[in-house]
Length: 62
Image 1 (cartoon, rainbow, N blue to C red):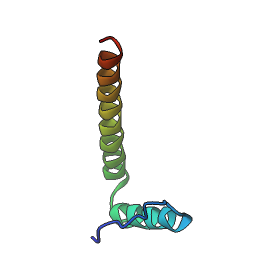
Image 2: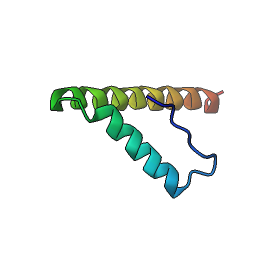
Image 3: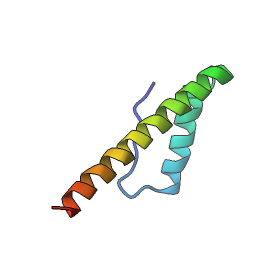
Image 4: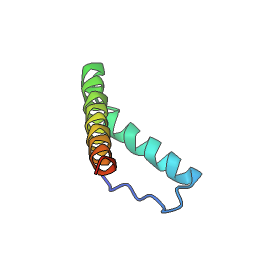
């Protein structure tokens, strides 16, 4: 799988690249595998948001 190369300006072409990349990642997955794939990404994003909020609440209370 090639590495996703996204422009620093994030153009419409980059959106097409991301969509094609995700299609290639998921095209041979079963529905259950796709659900697990997207849930893992959502869980990671939720964890990162929680850590970000926790860090910023600690900084603002100091």
